[in-house]
Length: 269
View: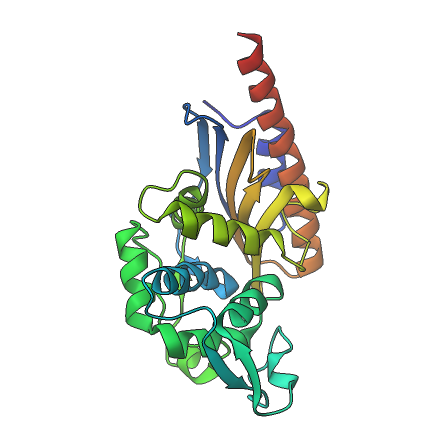
């Protein structure tokens, strides 16, 4: 199977390098359709690294090791980047569940670092290994400029993000309960741009990420069915993140139309 001409043209016209992995999954466990474009190329992960952090934390909660009700003192961290937790009054108490919501819905970097303090790097990287995310590695905390300067960068690929997100639709290596909780949090995303820019916002559950010259978005279109699109869109060499986000949205719009056509063909058989 090849990319539809419209998607192919949009990828060729993208203002930078782009990697894309897409899978269309019908409900009921039937076979889907999968396409990829340079999906094995490694990128700095930016905030997509928060996806394996999320799953590692939810699994620890499910095992009873880290109750979601466990409280942490936050505020005044001066982390930088996205989020609001660092601006809270020092000593404000948030639960682990609160931190996961902030980490996911507003990509909060201070919240993520608190989660990492609780979960640990080893647990996140062990989860990535177990899920077969061969190029996804957590090497530093959020907004750690010294670590980045020393070459300790968090990395991932579109293929890896697809593998992780597929577990949220057809869980095999994570529990259905963890998968459902993760889908709910991703559906609360407040940073709406990217792959779903031109789709109704209630159809998309996702996580974006950006750094200078990078724009990523990975998630699910119609996560509760009847046909779910699993996607991972990674890009670099982009001069304008707004332009990259809009271009990603055009790709998402075309992919959603392609998925709908496949679903229509399936119903017509």
